[in-house]
Amino acid sequence: TEARTFVFVSPTVSTIMRYITVLILVSQMNGLFKHNFNAVVQGYEYLPPTKPGYKILTRRDDGLMIIDKSSGLLTVPGKPSPNSSTSDCLLSRINADLGSEWRNVHRLDRDTSGCVLFARGGMLGEASRCFMRKSERVKNGDYGE
Image (cartoon, rainbow, N blue to C red; front, side, top):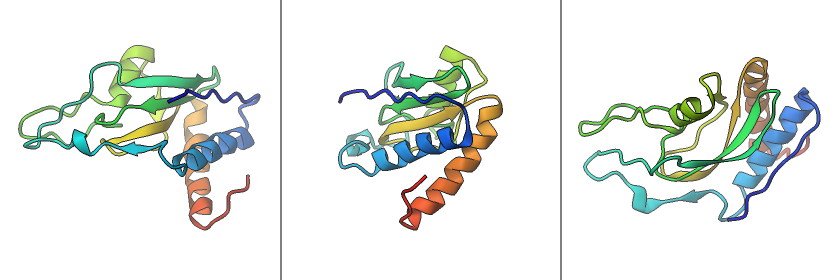
């Protein structure tokens, strides 16, 4: 798959909304978000992909970042399974590699690959609020800004 880089100019609410619009529209394109049915856990054992398990598509100094997550990797820690730990996840890998201030704005299921929006600092709360508003609007068929 070809990586796409999105560049935005200012960290305003409209910028966050554009980021979220891109994520939602991209997620609706056929074949970009893939569900890997071969990554199903055998005997409840969590087997995450080898590191890094993600690719940074775009990162801004003001606190927004889009990550391409591999299938088979949890976005956040899950419930521990009888045979393995679920603490190895995208969030823990990002924090180990880039610093512990990053938080995911939304999540994808373990077996789904695709884009995840991360934010830090003052952008986290605003990005979360914008994502929830935009998600509700898209569910109702409104794709505008």
